[in-house]
Amino acid sequence: MPFTALPADRPRAEAGIAAAYRAAGLTEPAHVLWVPSPLTGALLTALLDPGLAAEARTALLALLGPGTCVLRPTGAPERVLTPQEAAALLPSLEAGAPVREQVRSAPWERQRQEVAAELGARGYAEAWARTGGPRWDPVQGLVQRIRAAIGERAGEEHGPLVRRATLDAVLGQHDAPWLSLFAELGRLGPLAGVAEVAASAGWWWPRARLVIVAERPVELHRDEPGRLHNGEGPALAYPDGFGLHAWRGMAVEPGFVASLATLTAARILHEENAELRRVMLEHFGYDRYLAETGAAPVHKDKTGTLWRIDLPFDEPVVMVEVLNSTPEPDGTHRTYYLRVPPRTRTAREGVAWTFGLTAEEYHPQKET
Image: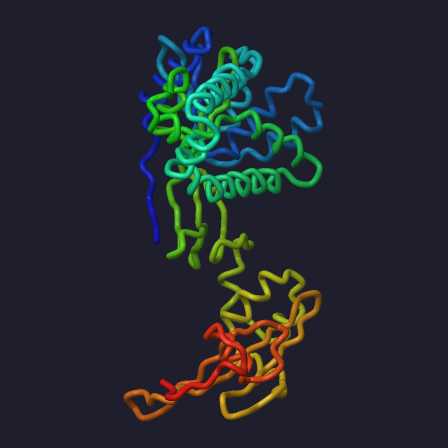
């Protein structure tokens, strides 16, 4: 299910930022720097560290990719910059200290405590369950994947530094779960500005005089259960090309899906990542894998045939092969492979398990 996001509403987001600063008792920032992705935002934030070693600074600058940054100073014309030009301009902007605690964390904790005291533990839990609770885990999982991908781009040596920079971000649209709780209760209060940014932009890094704000993603692809999934490109993509590749919710390398076209049984057997190997098996086809590896059945009876695929560093794949007794329109009978628990020892036990029964309880009167 592809989804194309609208670009950030910059005037609305900037008004929300100004409101968040005022609610925190801070002077509104002098500059807002729009960047094309959370990756660029994290890199530029890391470059603001005055104690950054020259070698690390050079490495981070080299990681800045394509895309367009827009600097919007208060009371002055905006400037369109490359990420590299934005990095060179940072010292002159006198960004100041991070103020995330004042504009987001402290007011969030105050509102949470007030709401929890009014509703009580049970009332608070019920309110959370009908607002942000159902969305919390999926969104947090996505946030962690974005952070991990940013760290991986920076490499083993500088990844921890850049990942730490992501912890200084207010998460924009990804703060929607907990904001929805306060919004439903009419208790946004000092968080109203933060909510405005969440409704109109991506991650943002608030400092005393400068705010770095990331654009929203331009593409989002999910499967029916709502997991990140795309077989033709990134499942989540930002304007500068930064994004996440995923197959049915599982992170994969950019070229993984294309490589499935030349998949072999040997490659499946030697794949060290158990999750990727399961995807490969599903794509390759269990019947084809059994045929090409010369596997022998474990057990056979009138209900079907039990097969077992032993895999290194993973539990075995055990399947029962059954023949549909109802013929297809052309008169043939379709064969199905049903995945069953590794402990299954007979075909009858496997078929029974698919109906939630034991082998002894399984007595079909008519097969369909």
